Amino acid sequence: MNIETIWLIAGLIMVIADLLFGTFFILFVGAAALITGMLIWMGILPDPTWQWVVFAVVSTLGLVLFRKKLVQIFGKGSGDLYQEHRGQKVQVIETIPVNGKGRVNYKGADWYAKSNDEQPIEAGDTAVVQQLDGIVLIVTKA
Image 1 (cartoon, rainbow, N blue to C red):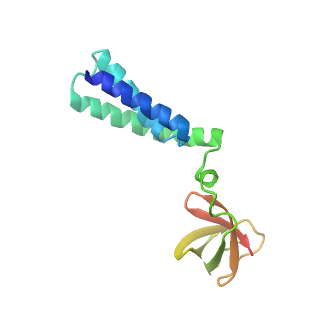
Image 2: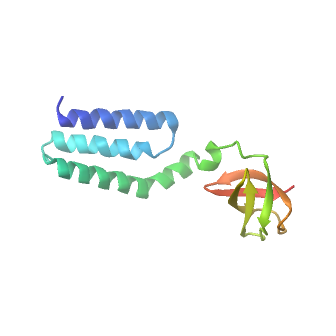
Image 3: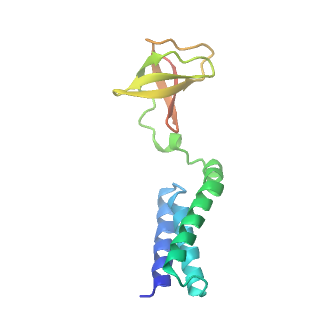
């Protein structure tokens, strides 16, 4: 099996995997592998070093330039994927100001937290997790 076939098969597998999982991460790595495979097939990238360079650059550019927009369009953010936090009670350890960040303790770990409440949630209060926004919990006062 020649090298361009390997790149193309790997790229196709990654693109299909991303369509199944919807992360929009593997998609760009797979697309970069497909592009690299096509460039090898056309005779533009015979050197393995340049194959890896093109693969890395195309993967990175795709992720940086397009992933966030695709996540916004298709609504597949981390808060949508991980729902096990929703409804869980947390202990506020650093006051969460209105429209600001504080800290809470959830399952023995400290997390940054924001609140959409119209009043601050004071340290020592109990709050309830509404959703996850990246690595920040969105909470309301219990």
